[in-house]
Length: 412
Length: 70
Image 1 (cartoon, rainbow over the protein chains, first blue to last red):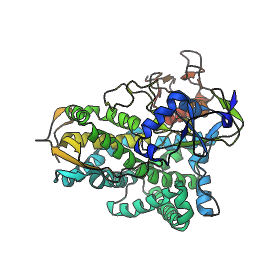
Image 2: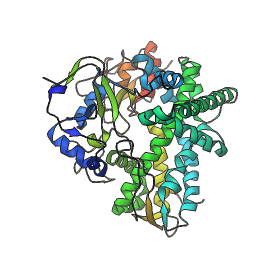
Image 3: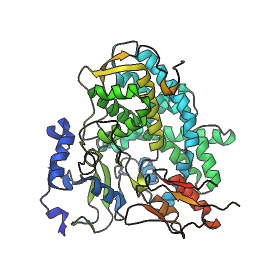
Image 4: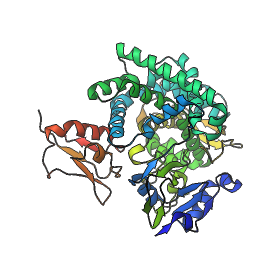
């Protein structure tokens, strides 16, 4: 056993040009030496097996400590009462209610509206041979699908999108310091909107996620009104930024591997596997922060209480001990668990929604886009954060005629 | 009341362990990192545990738990 502070560990600088240019190569070089690296003021878990062990470790907890109450008491209280900061049985009980709201019976009702939305976007996008997939598809699609998910008109979407984009800035330590009033206003706007939505749905239950949460709450009688609002308000920003990010990474992976797109076009039923492979190969998630809650140890290393240890899916998902040819984007590979949605107690609650949302997008695109090819520089946010794609310039060729296959003809 | 048995799809189970948190009388995660039933093989879930098993089925991130069809 050795104290983590005394070990000679590889050092990864997320702000370096080397990491920005090749995060996967940087992780791979470190992972060849050690399961853990020094990253910033804390440590990063690099291997798949150790990632799983830390996710499951009773002495490590998910730790998002970004909101200092000096910046905003409202945002501080809001983050403290959030699902991420809960643990144990209370947390599990609340999560199970939220999971019930997202069961497949409800999710299946979203597939048709998702299909209509993506088809509408493609009608416009495919008028051009060269286009920016971020502007045409990747940004608008996750926002527009919030309309059927929440059961609100499309005219509500721009305002919801603004609140959501501003409120996720609490996870950005530089923005919270500079823009606390703006972020607080967005969070208050979102919370007020959701409170009114909950009131409205109580009188008039429908086929939307808030109605499903109310039904689940009434089944279980275990959730307070405040918790119901918190759950509904937290799922909105969670659904927007991350789905945009992941769809961007996945479509970029295809644009860089035209032969994989050809496979999907030949067999759109590969869409589900393709979504999993996109999540594995190019995660939108950087680090999933954890902290040791007491003096503890793992894999021969001792950690003082409070040690920050983040799990990096961009490393674990490419561990050659688990994935053959890990740096190959192959939508037909046999899938093992990828950690882009996290794992265990705090695994992404919205994962089933994100999955069908991306599957419906890929299915529709596979029907209508015969080929896809990158034609310029991809602009993106720093890879030290989520790395979300800001532009994805591609040249596409349209499918000659609607392809029937197992999916029925395209009738829209 | 119908007799109720619960099934674990061990191919799907990845050992998140959420079932064991929410229904510790019914599920435990073994050294193989898979969920196991604490009930005697082939026995039904006791009536008092049915709501917690419902919770466990709902919470499983891999959708690995289900009631056995009658």
